Length: 367
Image (cartoon, rainbow, N blue to C red):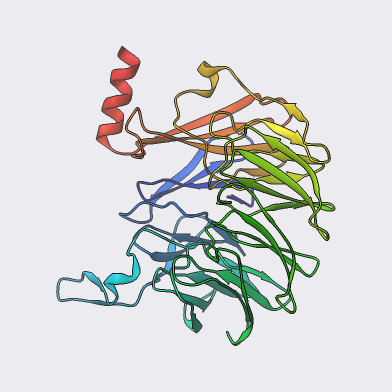
């Protein structure tokens, strides 16, 4: 996350790191949590919002001081100061919603099915709204409304009043479940669904304007640039639709995407690609403009690039996950600062997650 003149990076060992945008120099590292941080960071008014895998929400200053923390699940503290969840059936730490900052409030969903609104300065709860299942995607906010979906229990997508949390409308979606956040633009809500449908809703009424079935799930939120909206599918395809009609402008096959969000601006679509994150396409035609950096020595070791990139001051910032052959077990992560046009790597930071990762990396280097 770019915040002021720094880029702030969270790692799965619970640390927060501040890096200078211009030089890549490390300003500071701070332990925020003893649990992994997987969700995107949010920066608002010189403060950072971080949600960890223990489902605690932290508000941290740009110099690393924790202002407050809040449990995103109903809980109580026992005599040993341990937090005990009051709803063990909620899914625990498996799913978490990134927080959304809007008009002095913070909005986030939790596994027990509640969407919460809290004061940005104090963390005090303003309202909560119950849905039918876990809320694992960050809510979207626009025009005094908050839009959110759920996974696992029903087929509804919701629109609530930002101030009161009252229900304005709910709409039945094909398949119903969502893993990625919606995108709101010009009075329309673009929703990715687990069933693979790209859906466009009227933001005021919830009526379905258009929808299109892709072959497999759409895991991440769509991207918008100009008159086009872009969806990435597990079918290894990227779709570009006309925003108002749903007509396909182009489709590009053979590109594997997952949780990382497409970034579309200035007529280009940048991809958090599993094998090469520096690839980007022409936004109007889908033509590959740059295959990216294909030098394995420069890219280093990684399992996949599966996080949303950030852009600032003519630089692109990406992160990769590495498991050293242990599939699904992250052992290290690398942050890249690159030229988004040429894929030239300006600098990198490697973060090892504990002694096991350091040992495996040293053995690989020696071998």
